[in-house]
Image 1 (cartoon, one colour):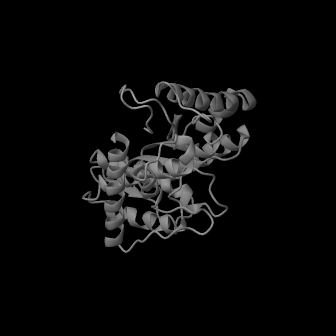
Image 2 (cartoon, rainbow, N blue to C red):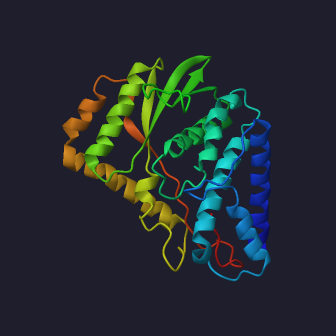
Image 3 (spheres, helix red, strand yellow):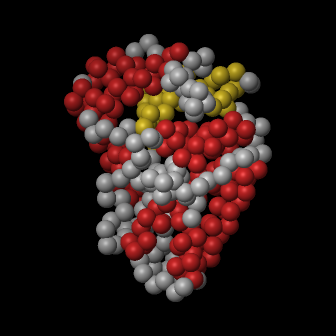
Length: 278
């Protein structure tokens, strides 16, 4: 019963999300190649109401898609009254391209997939009351940071997001270098390169086959270890001097912000429930 109420609540939130988008002329049809839409939560709800007694593995795709949709919806709805909310609309229009399903390998035309991470970060800043500038998803020339936080109306900190798919460390370093260049050319006083590593973590075993984690902290620890290993390999293969040259004399700080959408399944801390999807 606890799971049913939880999923029902999530579905209500997604309903409100669709209503807000409709107010701005944005609709979300199902995408032909990805199958992404707003329906996963309702599919889960229907299964549970019908007496579903399986495990999360039986509905893995629905849960991963549903969690991604809910996370996006919650962040956007939290800032719908923010004065910079209208700047999100061009990005939200790209949802019609089927980028809602953030937790699967993106299609060949992945512009929307790449840009949705900008929405996530912009809404996090906006939720703190920060004014933001958001680079237009379609008219961008790729030479400006994706998100710029303002301070008293002036550009203060830039965030240059890069989605990384290649397993090669040189590719990751090249992405970082491009982000540093974008920050250098922008009017902000400082900035940080942020890498979306979701594609690199899809096969990291963070949702174990045929089971679940006994403690949610285990996949969190595994994620940190995986991310740390990626950047250790960059230094091992390219050398610390090559990395230092990328940041030398630049406005970008010498740290990297890592972002990834990682659904997992772990035992609910409450003894009465066998499993849950945080």
